[in-house]
Image (cartoon, helix red, strand yellow):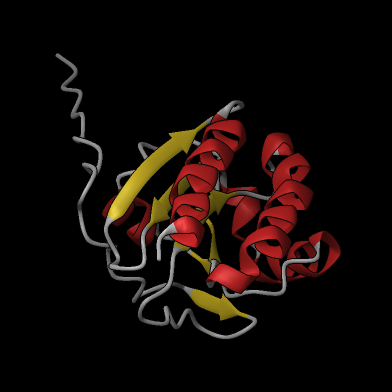
Length: 159
Protein backbone atom coordinates (compact mmCIF):
# COMPACT_ATOMS: atom_id res chain seq x y z
CA UNK A 1 0.00 0.00 0.00
CA UNK A 2 1.32 3.43 -0.99
CA UNK A 3 0.47 6.31 1.29
CA UNK A 4 0.33 9.72 -0.38
CA UNK A 5 0.56 12.77 1.83
CA UNK A 6 -0.90 16.01 0.52
CA UNK A 7 0.14 19.25 2.15
CA UNK A 8 -2.41 21.98 2.48
CA UNK A 9 -1.13 25.05 0.60
CA UNK A 10 -0.46 28.29 2.42
CA UNK A 11 -3.71 30.15 2.85
CA UNK A 12 -4.31 33.78 1.97
CA UNK A 13 -3.43 35.91 4.99
CA UNK A 14 -0.68 33.54 6.20
CA UNK A 15 2.45 35.41 7.31
CA UNK A 16 5.57 35.01 5.18
CA UNK A 17 7.43 31.86 6.28
CA UNK A 18 11.00 32.11 7.54
CA UNK A 19 13.70 32.22 4.91
CA UNK A 20 16.30 30.87 7.33
CA UNK A 21 18.14 27.60 6.74
CA UNK A 22 18.82 28.02 3.03
CA UNK A 23 21.76 25.96 1.80
CA UNK A 24 23.51 29.10 0.46
CA UNK A 25 22.56 32.71 -0.30
CA UNK A 26 23.69 34.46 -3.48
CA UNK A 27 23.70 38.28 -3.80
CA UNK A 28 23.22 38.55 -0.02
CA UNK A 29 20.65 37.01 2.26
CA UNK A 30 17.06 38.16 2.05
CA UNK A 31 16.33 41.12 4.25
CA UNK A 32 12.65 41.87 3.84
CA UNK A 33 12.21 45.55 4.67
CA UNK A 34 9.21 46.40 6.76
CA UNK A 35 6.85 47.36 5.16
CA UNK A 36 7.63 45.92 1.74
CA UNK A 37 5.53 44.02 -0.77
CA UNK A 38 7.52 40.89 -1.57
CA UNK A 39 7.33 38.41 -4.41
CA UNK A 40 9.00 35.08 -3.62
CA UNK A 41 9.69 32.88 -6.63
CA UNK A 42 10.77 29.24 -6.56
CA UNK A 43 12.69 28.12 -9.64
CA UNK A 44 15.21 25.55 -10.86
CA UNK A 45 18.00 25.64 -13.44
CA UNK A 46 16.48 22.63 -15.21
CA UNK A 47 13.09 24.35 -15.55
CA UNK A 48 12.78 26.04 -18.97
CA UNK A 49 9.62 27.92 -17.97
CA UNK A 50 11.40 29.32 -14.90
CA UNK A 51 14.23 30.70 -17.02
CA UNK A 52 11.87 32.02 -19.68
CA UNK A 53 10.00 34.03 -17.00
CA UNK A 54 13.06 35.76 -15.51
CA UNK A 55 12.93 38.83 -17.82
CA UNK A 56 9.25 39.33 -16.93
CA UNK A 57 10.12 39.24 -13.22
CA UNK A 58 12.73 41.94 -13.85
CA UNK A 59 10.02 44.01 -15.56
CA UNK A 60 7.86 43.64 -12.43
CA UNK A 61 10.72 45.00 -10.34
CA UNK A 62 11.31 47.91 -12.71
CA UNK A 63 7.60 48.77 -12.75
CA UNK A 64 6.99 48.51 -9.00
CA UNK A 65 10.37 49.42 -7.50
CA UNK A 66 9.02 52.84 -6.45
CA UNK A 67 6.36 51.05 -4.38
CA UNK A 68 9.01 48.99 -2.61
CA UNK A 69 8.54 45.66 -4.40
CA UNK A 70 11.21 43.16 -3.49
CA UNK A 71 11.89 39.92 -5.36
CA UNK A 72 13.36 36.99 -3.48
CA UNK A 73 14.36 34.01 -5.57
CA UNK A 74 14.67 30.50 -4.18
CA UNK A 75 16.41 27.88 -6.31
CA UNK A 76 14.83 24.54 -5.40
CA UNK A 77 16.36 21.64 -7.35
CA UNK A 78 14.16 19.36 -9.42
CA UNK A 79 16.83 16.66 -9.61
CA UNK A 80 20.26 15.83 -8.24
CA UNK A 81 21.83 17.53 -11.27
CA UNK A 82 20.32 20.85 -10.09
CA UNK A 83 22.14 20.68 -6.75
CA UNK A 84 25.51 21.96 -8.02
CA UNK A 85 25.86 25.31 -6.23
CA UNK A 86 28.40 26.63 -8.75
CA UNK A 87 26.04 25.90 -11.66
CA UNK A 88 23.25 27.73 -9.84
CA UNK A 89 25.54 30.71 -9.18
CA UNK A 90 26.46 30.82 -12.89
CA UNK A 91 22.77 30.65 -13.87
CA UNK A 92 21.90 33.48 -11.45
CA UNK A 93 24.53 35.65 -13.11
CA UNK A 94 23.51 34.62 -16.64
CA UNK A 95 19.82 35.25 -15.94
CA UNK A 96 20.55 38.68 -14.45
CA UNK A 97 19.16 37.99 -10.97
CA UNK A 98 20.62 40.75 -8.83
CA UNK A 99 18.41 40.37 -5.75
CA UNK A 100 18.74 37.82 -2.99
CA UNK A 101 18.63 34.23 -4.18
CA UNK A 102 18.56 31.28 -1.80
CA UNK A 103 19.66 27.83 -2.81
CA UNK A 104 17.34 25.34 -1.14
CA UNK A 105 18.99 21.98 -1.89
CA UNK A 106 17.18 20.26 1.00
CA UNK A 107 13.76 21.71 0.02
CA UNK A 108 13.52 23.22 3.51
CA UNK A 109 12.11 26.51 2.22
CA UNK A 110 10.01 24.77 -0.41
CA UNK A 111 8.39 22.66 2.30
CA UNK A 112 7.88 25.69 4.51
CA UNK A 113 6.18 27.57 1.66
CA UNK A 114 4.29 24.39 0.72
CA UNK A 115 5.18 24.56 -2.97
CA UNK A 116 4.09 20.98 -3.54
CA UNK A 117 7.23 20.48 -5.63
CA UNK A 118 5.93 22.66 -8.47
CA UNK A 119 8.18 24.89 -10.60
CA UNK A 120 7.92 27.80 -11.05
CA UNK A 121 5.96 28.85 -8.00
CA UNK A 122 5.20 32.46 -6.99
CA UNK A 123 4.05 33.87 -3.66
CA UNK A 124 3.02 37.52 -3.27
CA UNK A 125 3.08 39.03 0.21
CA UNK A 126 1.76 42.49 1.04
CA UNK A 127 3.60 45.16 3.02
CA UNK A 128 2.40 43.55 6.26
CA UNK A 129 3.97 40.21 5.27
CA UNK A 130 0.62 38.51 4.63
CA UNK A 131 0.14 36.18 1.68
CA UNK A 132 -2.06 37.82 -0.93
CA UNK A 133 -1.74 35.25 -3.72
CA UNK A 134 0.11 32.19 -4.92
CA UNK A 135 0.48 30.86 -8.44
CA UNK A 136 2.42 28.09 -10.09
CA UNK A 137 3.23 26.38 -13.35
CA UNK A 138 3.16 27.69 -16.90
CA UNK A 139 0.44 30.29 -16.26
CA UNK A 140 1.81 31.26 -12.85
CA UNK A 141 3.66 34.33 -14.11
CA UNK A 142 0.47 35.81 -15.60
CA UNK A 143 -1.47 35.13 -12.41
CA UNK A 144 1.36 36.67 -10.34
CA UNK A 145 1.32 39.72 -12.61
CA UNK A 146 -2.43 40.19 -12.17
CA UNK A 147 -2.05 39.93 -8.38
CA UNK A 148 0.83 42.42 -8.41
CA UNK A 149 -1.22 44.90 -10.39
CA UNK A 150 -4.19 44.59 -8.04
CA UNK A 151 -2.05 44.92 -4.91
CA UNK A 152 0.44 47.58 -5.98
CA UNK A 153 -1.81 49.69 -8.20
CA UNK A 154 -4.31 49.81 -5.34
CA UNK A 155 -1.52 50.80 -2.95
CA UNK A 156 -0.43 53.59 -5.29
CA UNK A 157 -3.94 55.09 -5.44
CA UNK A 158 -4.68 54.85 -1.72
CA UNK A 159 -4.09 58.23 0.01
